Image 1: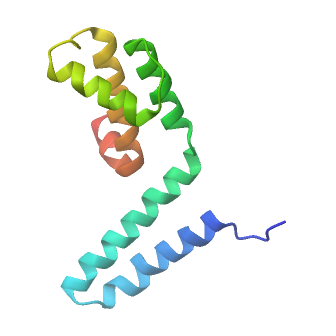
Image 2: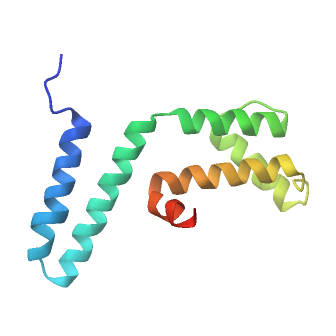
Image 3: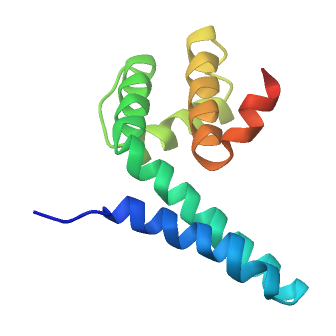
Length: 117
């Protein structure tokens, strides 16, 4: 059994130290780099929280609208081909694309979504 803090908690603590204590003392060029690293750490934390559920949901939705099975990469490639050749203009396709885009933004930049509300 692992002790606390957990891996996610350690990553969050490291991100906060980097962002709040180390970054202010850096040169402007290094500050930008440090903030990018802190942002990447925050994305990883959100991915750890949601696990693989987003990919599972996306794969199921794509399988449903495409009428085929496959891994996520194959399904996305097929969807791209259908869009490229004009065969994806139905509302179900646009709903899936919207939902996937929102899920990705929620993972990478959740403040953007809260500003939109």
